[in-house]
Length: 370
Image 1 (spheres, rainbow, N blue to C red):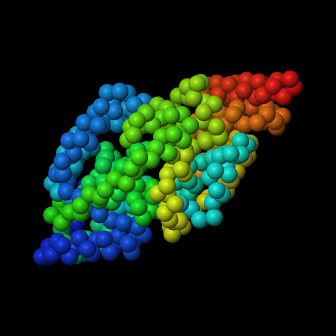
Image 2 (image 1 turned 90 degrees about the horizontal axis):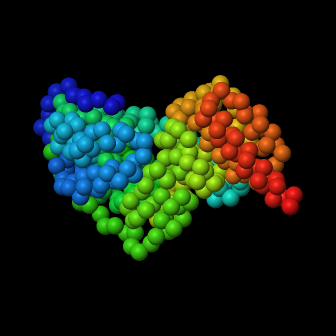
């Protein structure tokens, strides 16, 4: 639930230290692999400065919502008056039995989808679990105010998770932990209870630059700094217009998101498989051909991806992304025929990327004949 609420049961005296320990135990029962607590009034000066600098450089691209809320992202009481603490949680998403990511990425005729998106939309799953956690707290303390989030409001999730000691910000800007790498979702609860807070942890990235070096589009322009305009996740998900021509060949077969920086991170050898059925692979999206997906009708897209985070990008953007993948794929007559079948697509966005893909396929055909 994404609105500030007030639990209305009878007020009870509370040992807040004991309650904090209980909250962490309840978190484990609810499937969170860790739960930590931060002071909502913690010093976020450096985080704010970094955010405003990022925005000033235009690194947020077309994500105008990143600039809308100012310091509300770093000052919880400005977003929800009365907030004293931030509870941060994480839940593993790596699905069991999924095709190995590198095997898919290296097969140009397959479609790679970021592993977090192979199952059900995490926003609803995480918020529902946090709501259950709030219910447990309310049963213990009585009336209290709270609001739960999962990538659903102006909240600096990684920064607050770091303040809570859940992990540290990696050079790819994702949260890292020594116990579970980075393949997990984050969630938060703002609340007005004066719980004891946890200490921040150490940054264990050291001198490693594997995430920076592997990025296909070199979107990590400096340690801890990502230019979203070059990031494949931004290009395939957040960007609603044409993908810059110079970046299309670098995208390869990644049609929804990109995991390269996580796949090479040494800490992800500790990433855990999810115990959450909602995050298991649906519709064989872990290992499917670009041609198969390009053949989906809009009805198939809407039906098969119901409840999936992918569905929110819409059918035209889905076809746009796959067209780029097909343009980057090895030449085959089947790919050319599939692209030609959509040269007159009703969407100008799709048509543009189909024409580009056909040009790429024609160049590859010419090279073979020579």
